[in-house]
Figure 1 (cartoon, rainbow, N blue to C red):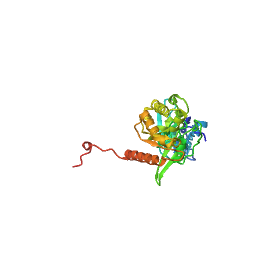
Figure 2: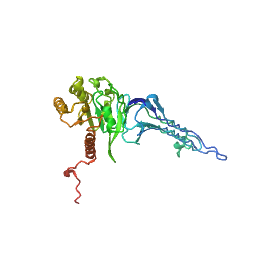
Figure 3: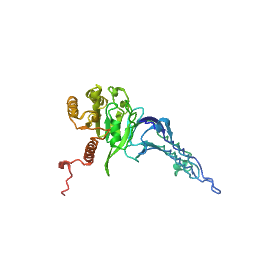
Figure 4: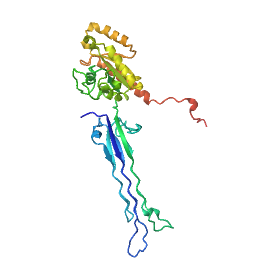
Length: 356
């Protein structure tokens, strides 16, 4: 299935049905009085977060979505039926915004979450609503109210705890396949990964986290070069970034330090908040580096990059060092989740006085 993380749709809730002007006609009853019913409500448009979906491709080919209008009121005190609602299934992590102003209207962050994105119009009043002591035969009625119409932009940001970033062919796809249940395409040419891949990493029976593998970044990505810039948004909801570096590039005459600095620069240009996220260094493909040269090569790389955070030495191909990386990542994520769920301490000066 083609991965689509952006789509535009036009939605229209149903208009309300019109009220009815009618009078009771019964044998031997000359003045039966008004009995025109109200119109029915127009159909609403709902959006539901479906955990079984991971792309917006359905909305790329089906742009218009209209709910049914309400039925008109009828005589004999009969109200019109409400119009049928429609429910649009969207992936968890979808952001719904106004296509013209860019204002974010809703976010679907919880599986099964249901929101109303367009309300149907109320039905109009029939003439029985206008009956009074001084107006016993009203002929007034009101039309139904129009339903909401919106032009919306749908944007998907995947919900992952950890995001992998790095140059093309740094080994990100091999790493995610080594530590999770994801099976991305792996080959020895650049831009093998053409769309984000999500994998669940199992640490224990009830211990896991989600990792996202994105297309490789190149210099100028924030300005549109390469493929990675299309998917940088998916890193914005992660708790931790793993910067994967191909340490075998030294043998090819390239300098991994220059590539790593270019990635960091692109992150900062794209989004300062993304640049400020916790970022760890994962030095990959060390199985291709002679054992006696590894310590000096790693030390030289970290020194020239001036990196101050945690550094992990791994080989995703033979899973060397991956277990330590996974356990450390899980501890970090668990600690952040615990901190988020811990209520902040309240200054005693602001607590209510219950001494009385």
